[in-house]
Length: 163
Image (cartoon, rainbow, N blue to C red; front, side, top):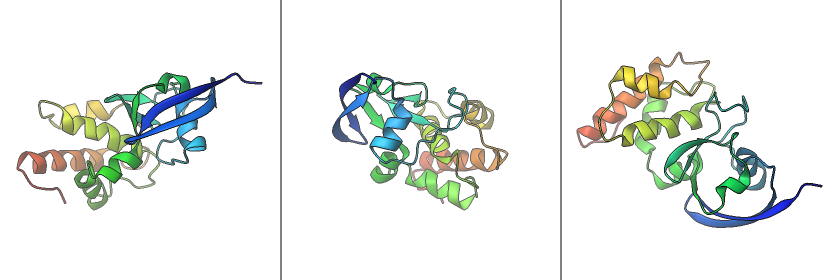
């Protein structure tokens, strides 16, 4: 029988507490215990980006974190970022440019793109591509994704909403 731990952290702006197995991965905690479908389990090696989360303001791979590592942290998933409206303009651009075809990578892409948009200095197309390179997409070829991120960055810089 797996040892368990009482775990308390903030999830998408709300304090949560659960008793969980110490070997449970963070992405499995979010999906199985909290019922969130945004973070995906794909490669389970931290290289595809489908399980990307924001933990204490930094991108993290949910498949590489064990649930106990979330103790006391502030965790955001695509569901939380969507609910706050923080990335509504970015989501609109993804939709307008068909940058989310099958949708498997979309949550991780959006969280990573949000970090790009929050960067202190604007990134050019090449820097956007490099920053997104840790998130795999097999459908779009990245062109539409880069277009969506760049359009959102430009719209924000001009003080207007994208799409």
